[in-house]
Amino acid sequence: MMRLTADDLKKDVDMLLDDLKRNYEIPSVLNSVRFLSKVIAIALVVQFFLSALDFFIWGGEYKGGFREAIIVYCIGFLGVFLLPSLVLLIVCHNPVMMISCLSDETKKKSVLLSLAKVKFKYVLYFAILINLFVGVCFTLNESAMIAFMGGSWFVTVIVSTIIYNMMMAPYFTPAVVSGLSKVKELLSASTK
Image (cartoon, rainbow, N blue to C red; front, side, top):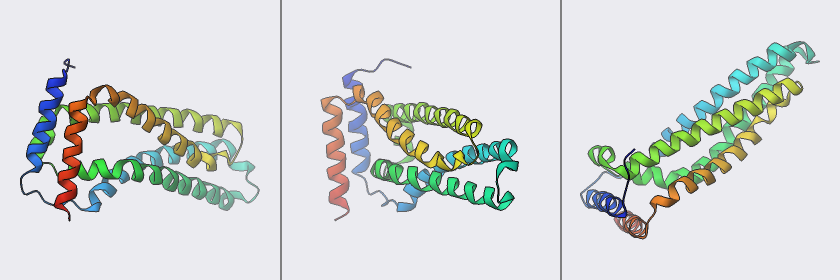
């Protein structure tokens, strides 16, 4: 990756601001939901894998048989779906909506957005690996522990958000913060 200067970032934010001065389409909340559903789908695939592993190892241990196992797995899926979704919705809604206002050309050109996307992928891979590790430990430890994976994802999403913010912090120079404040003002004024 190329080295960035404060001037490069300022120019990038100015480009974002100029793009928003055009007559853009007001984004739908569905943009935020689509983004959220992609991230949660990954967590649900991991949960499915861990549930299958749990049933393979502990299937005979469930006193209620297959029905009890299904109930435990449904509780796990519900936890994995609801708990991280809440945090992700709070953290990601505004940035996703802001990015949705930008033209496709600007999204492709923006150094800051490209950087944010790359860092987000790193943090997402971190969250997946941590939860796979925790899930395998839960599964190998005892039957039905897999139902508690929602809590693991919840904590991991919070920790990942903190890590992501720390990774992006060096790029938020005073000029970038000022420019992003202007972007927020421009978007707020246009929706009133």
